[in-house]
Length: 134
Image (cartoon, rainbow, N blue to C red):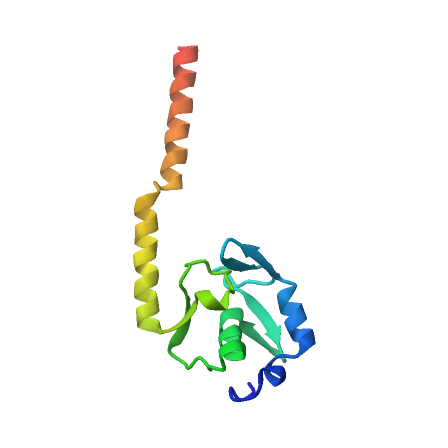
């Protein structure tokens, strides 16, 4: 990785910027990544011989901050594929995990379990068949 104090033009060439921008799509205030992702849906990009998390690359390229080991780039919007620099926040890993856990718990409470809904649908279907055929 080049030094963070390098000028932006040396951290990201025009060709590299074009490749990255071609894979971004606006979705509300988020910039959704349409390129390669990891198993959790986080954007990945090949940059100068290395596979990067896109968020870490953006923080380094645009802000000049190298993200140290034990620190994460968190999404304030909670969308893993978002690459909008305004939504990215560098946090220590413990804080990031605590926030992710709280958001996941809130989402679970907000919507019923999909598997339970499928089970209910199957039960209703079964009851209809019993009623229909006796």
